[in-house]
Image 1 (cartoon, rainbow, N blue to C red):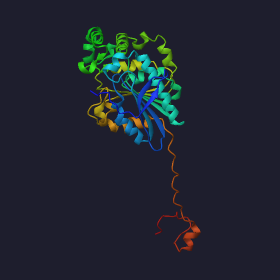
Image 2: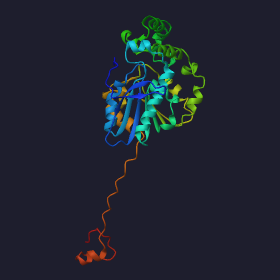
Image 3: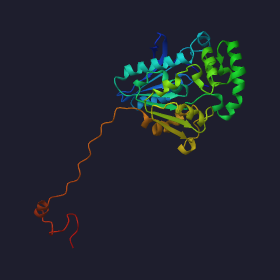
Image 4: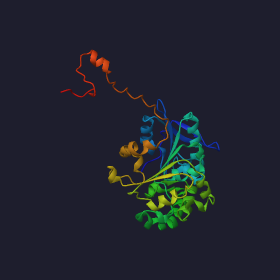
Length: 319
């Protein structure tokens, strides 16, 4: 389990003035910018390896934590829900755009990090890469999770939040630690076939307004979500082309990916082959083609004493 930590080099201001912990990864000569938007109960530090790699590939990269995720005490005091977190992601996007200096921007969202895309100013984004992002309704869960979901949502989650003042998922070995209102709202969503529509009645309209080209990536060994969950989410983006990648890790030469593994160092080969070609970037200037070797003119060959006969192509031997 990844813990929240203090390895940040900046803060960014949310739209309500709240300071959010953030880290910038700066290349020497950026050709694009990337916002890494985290999954539920996943700290910014989890994405450090990918962020370092992106900076090395020429992309100004920003990671951030949603508010109220700094530890149990902070979580108990936090009153934000997922919609408020979506506002934090929108503010992070605007901070990145300000520093990108006109360079193209890619939103790379992990699970929840792409579910909340419709709440951001998506007109600022040139490309979207959604990884393991689907409808979280419990009947869309992978079989092992689906069997345990009723116990989690009807008994364990409400009881744990009431007792601890937040969801102590790390102690329970389930999901991870979450502020109370986030867990309560997520519970409502996961118990509804329409997921976030239960709280956001016009979410379909919001999603239909997204016109940014998108790639949706899901791996067949995802331990949390099925392909049906991913398809249900992708189907709501009716206003943009969605490239749907459903990938078997074994066929890609990777032992395991699952729900989180794409962002681990062990998936570096996938960053190169799958992610990099799908990032928005300033086109690399094409080098001029080398001049074609010139054929010597006939008068030059004759002057050099070559035995050229009329009608014999240059370069063919003469018997």
